Amino acid sequence: MRPKLVVGNWKMNGSRANNATLLAGIVEGLGNGKANAAVCVPAPYLQQCADVLAGTTLAWGAQDVSLHASGAYTGDVAASMLVDFACRYVIVGHSERRAYHGETDHMVAQKALAALDAGLTPIVCVGETLAEREAEQTNVVVGKQLSAVLELLDGDAVERIVVAYEPVWAIGTGKTATPAMAQEVHAQLRSRLRERSGLAAEKVAILYGGSMKPDNAVELMQQADIDGGLIGGAALKAADFLAIINAA
Ligand code: PEP
View 1 (cartoon, protein in one colour):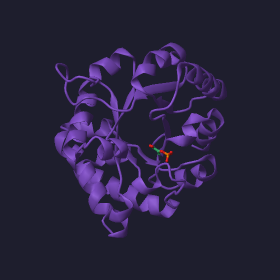
View 2 (tube, helix red, strand yellow):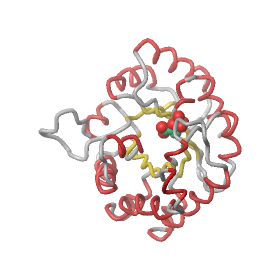
View 3 (cartoon, helix red, strand yellow):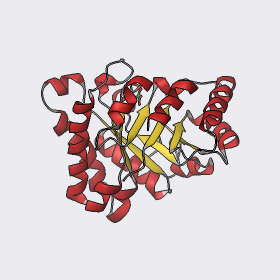
């Protein structure tokens, strides 16, 4: 059985003072348990995570990475730099980056590759807009987004990614896919992984993201192909984030 994984996406939220309180609350709540959990924070706060979280069970990571290794790319952050801050994870292809920064499926795939090459675990986000769902294009859209990544990765690298299914219409809106709706897409994503590699299909965690909260987390994570959550708003409150981790 795949272990459940819960990852908080802080987006562009936080301050040194607020982060200190939030991280301390999460760490205290986790105690000595064996939670499989992480927070993905704005890049300037990675050192704070490294200072506070080293030696705890909470891992940390970033929300984006450059597809380039180094050089004249003002404002970008290279995967090797994230490794310098002891990141384990990096989110790639979040719908906000696809929508506001023009990231294409191919760019997202290149970012996943850059992350893997540096030894990071990319959390590859896929998801359809409301218009795409209403046009019954969900499986086509998410299938294409995942395939772009699978095409670029060699051999067993596919086994080292995490996938997050995040319907765009459910992110930050309070609307959640029903467990059955989410499960259907997760199963579809897993069969696409299986076409590429049976082992990858067994190993790769597919997280659900989109208004996951303490009161819907259990039912979502009970679905056969939902291996955890990528949590936005609810990751900014220690009690809510801990309740979701406990649900896992
Ligand atoms: C996200 O942005 O990855 C997300 C899932 O946000 P929320 O939980 O707030 O919908």
